[in-house]
Length: 346
Figure 1 (cartoon, one colour):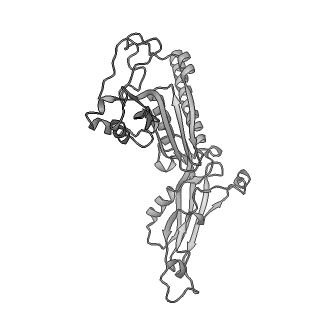
Figure 2: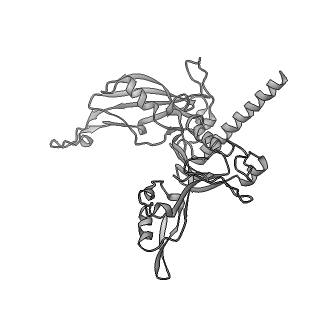
């Protein structure tokens, strides 16, 4: 691995960072001659930006530029553990004659993502045995399996032989409490995110009848409250060719990287390699296995350019989750400042 040099820098030039190293800009302020990297609000406001790269139904990819790794990691951890959602907390089992034990059934129900805006509810008090319409959603699941009398005698297909032998989340019915029916429109009532999640399988005579209470919580308390399937970031790859790479070397260089990172053009009748898109590099380091190629390329990371990827479970849109994460971080900052003010008064 090549160690970044620490020689004199030109005005405004940033020191290079080795892959995966030096992502924090304030560990040792003034460590590089001619470069002042202590944190400054004016510089931060000038450099910081957010660029949305891709936004689909449940996936958001964006670039966050001009921040430290500590702040980037704070957003990731808040998304995983501190943005609240609604999830099944209590399961009242009135009848369960399936082969699934009550506690396993309750566990499966708790992990079902519930599409309901948590911002419309309050946290339930720990001492409350029963929920209210401002902090609890109720769902009922009542399914009984029976034989299909019209099925062919020679059939062995359970879908033809039995009725309601598969219990899906579409069988969960919302039970409005108080004025909840007025709070949610008929076109978008509280419901499981996906209607085809398989909960259990039944056979004739078996029955499941349960009532579920959903409450507001955060992933720090239980993973079932986490609003994201994944939230991650990586530093923007930086790939530079140290000298022209031509002919057969150019083709070999191209094969060392992910498709699309290196392109080979015909220049004056010769094949010449160039960096097309360093962003999609997976960091395999295959190049360093070849002695005649490894010294032709310089690989690193842009120390303050983070590529974020947020995949929502479907409870809230990923851009909404990011907004809520920012609000949580702002609330933490306000509480910290208030504590500092109170400490100074004491």
